[in-house]
Image (cartoon, rainbow, N blue to C red; front, top):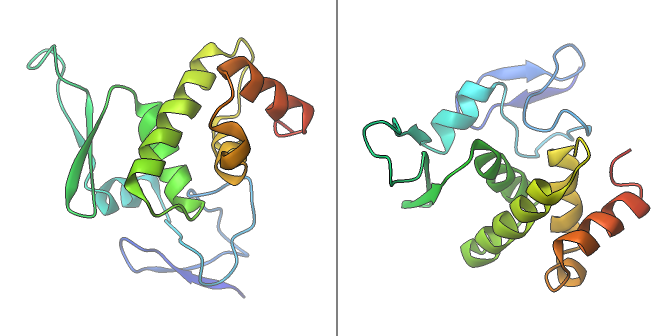
Length: 148
């Protein structure tokens, strides 16, 4: 039995019995960041949705992280933000730069890109990826087997 405590609701979940939302493509080791549901991710990061009809020129999503608001136009950017933080990146400038780079590559790709895998790949290889074009990032991602 592997019990893991959700960072948001503090509920203990048996990872051997339950799927986990925060990183479904990898095994979570005890003690690693863990969320038991999408709702817990939303409440942990204080994610707020702005109705676009009320504010057409403003971003759709605001994420509060370490006491500061960060604005995103797409839900995929919020997912990337979470994935990059989950990868262990702490510097907010680096996190936001990764979000921009990964989102640009994701939108450029004609394939059904596994976004979580792409975010993990770029975060793990950031020093090599940060100066590459979107096409080169995607080429490296697929050639290194990141989509498998």
